Length: 76
Ligand code: SF4
Image (cartoon, rainbow, N blue to C red; front, side, top):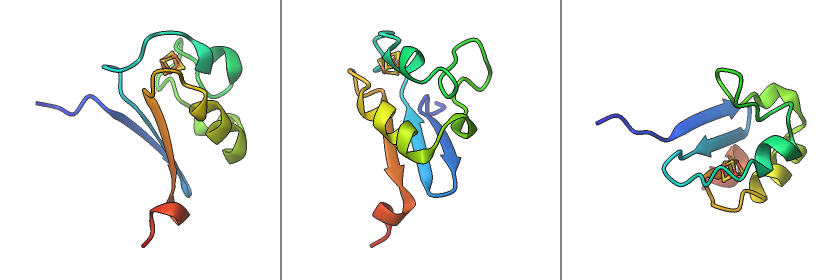
């Protein structure tokens, strides 16, 4: 069975989205429309804002469907 978790990567930044967890609060869309736009495919565009803004917004996701990690933090 295909893993439903979507993964978006740009440089050091990796954002994952688990649709099974999302509660459709639209906090991400309202907070950072240039990155999170459900009318587009893919709906996550990491070119739409700075890494810092993306990280800030992902941390506001109330369900935890969005998660972020930085390559620098992933290295041992
Ligand atoms: S903020 Fe999180 S829970 Fe709300 S719509 Fe976005 S991904 Fe889903």
